[in-house]
Amino acid sequence: MKKNNITVELIRAALAFIPATLPRDDWARLAMAVKSEFPDATGFELFDAWSQTGDGYSAKATRGT
Image (cartoon, rainbow, N blue to C red; front, side, top):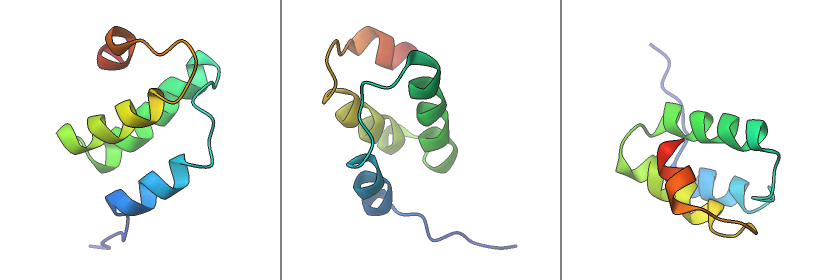
C-alpha cells in the first residue's frame, strides 16, 4: 500500500495560497479534500482556520460543511 506524505504543515502551506472567498461549491470541495486526508478534528481545525480568513466567515456554515 502506498503511503502519502501529506502533512498538516503541507496542507496549511497550500491553503495560504488559496483565498477563502472561493465560490461555495469550490469552498465545500476544498473542505472535502482536507477531510479526506485528515477526517478528524485536525482536518476541521485546518479548514476552519483557513475559512476564517475570508469575508463572510460563518462558524455554523463551516461546521455544517
